[in-house]
Image (cartoon, rainbow, N blue to C red; front, top):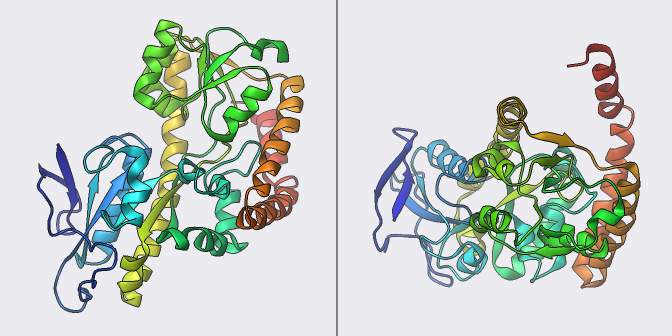
Length: 374
C-alpha cells in the first residue's frame, strides 16, 4: 500500500512504495535520536490514523498536520502518514503510539472511551459544546491540562488537530415526526449518541464507514449518521435514505486529536515542541474552516441536484433527547476520578461560554436570517 511522506521542499505529498520503515520513530524505552533542528539532520516520525488514505476532511486533517510539522521545522522533523490498515488497524492506533510502534496518531479520541469515558469530552458528547466552544475549553479553561493528565499514563501527549464542526442528525428512510418513530429504529450511531438512541427505544448499530451504505441498501439499518454534507455526499447515502435531518444532537463539534508518544514528545527540544503545537493549532483552525466551506457546497449539491429533503427534529424530540443526553453524559462522571473532574470542568466551561453565545452569535444568526433571509 502507498505511503505519504510530506517533504518541506515541495510542500506536497509524494507517494512511494511502502517499506519496512526501519528508520521510523523510536520504540518505547529506547534512547531517542539527538535533536535534528540545529544539526541539519532529519528525524522521521510515523503517524498512523483511523482514516482511509486521502479521506476528505478527516484524513486530510491528518495530512495537513503532518505537512505543517514538516514544513515549519524546515525538514528537521519529517512526518510520514499511514492510513488505517497500512501499519495497524484503525482502532489500534492508540496502542501503537502508546507502545512506540508508531510515533503519533490522528483520530477521534472518543474511540478510546473503553480506557476512560473521559475521552468522550475531548471529541464530542450529546448536547455538548460546539467546535469553537471546545477549542476555548481546551485552550483556556483547563481542558488541555486535564487531557494531559488523562493521557500521560497511557504514554500519550494529546493535542487538538482538526474539527468537523456541527454534524448532521442523520439519513432516515422514513420521516421522524414523534418520539414514537424512534421505537424499533435501527440506526448506525456510535458513542454516547448511540446510548441516547437506545433509551429512545431504538437500536444503535456499530458499523465502520465502509459498511454503512450496504447496510442501508440491504435494510439492515433504517438510518445512519456519518459526518455532514461533504462526507455524506461522497458516500451517496441520499440514494437509500431520502430524509436528511439536522442539526444533530450527538456531535455538535467533533474535535480530532493528534496524540504523540510521550517519550518522543519529551525528547524534542523546546523549539520543535513549539513547532508541533503551532502546527496542530493551525491544522485545527484550517480543518474547521474547510469543513464549513465544503459542507456549504455539498449541501447545495444534495438539495439542488439530488432532491434531498431536509428535515428538523421537533421540539418534543429535542426536549426528550436533551433530558436523556444530560443523564447519559453525567453518568460518565461516575466511571473514575479523572472522568468526574473532566466532566465538571467541561460543564462549567459550557455554562460560561453559553452565556456569551446567548447574547452574541445565537441572536445574531436569528436576526441575520430574519432580515436578509438566504
